Amino acid sequence: MTRKLRLVLGLVLVAIVGLTAAGCRTAPEPSATAPEVAAEPEMPVVIVAYYPLNESHQYIVDYLGELESAHPGQISVKVVDMQSPEGREAWQETGLSCAGVFVNGETRHHITVDGETRTVDFLKRMDVFWTKEDFEAVVNDLLGETGQADEATAEEPESGK
Image: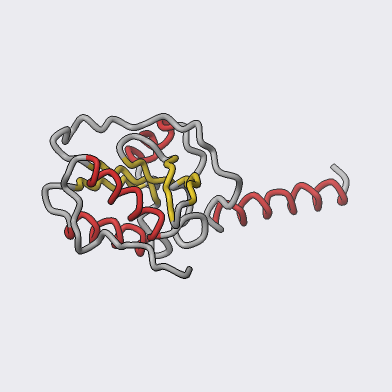
């Protein structure tokens, strides 16, 4: 193998490792398969999140736990550690190529904000690819559909924005 070829292969390897470490920052993949959500059918909102349980992703896990605590009996949250052997296997079965959050079996949802409907994908890193506001809009819509919306977390859009 020539020195130039080894250098190119080395750079490709570094790029792959860098992209993986950066949180899989590629285009969203809407074709993921919903995980089993039958464990708690009595819950109006079932959230299953697939993330590596490390310091870099802990704020997402904490946020989901706070959301569950704020809606007792309404929201169920399960976080799957993609770095454990069992978690990696479960994550691979979903078809995701990176981290993601399923809400009632879907990572892709439609929300209406200020009269405008748009699509959000809860894939990859929160605050980079999706926001808490987007997530809460979906959750509040789902809770509202079942007549169980929590008025404390359902925010009205401010006029003039």
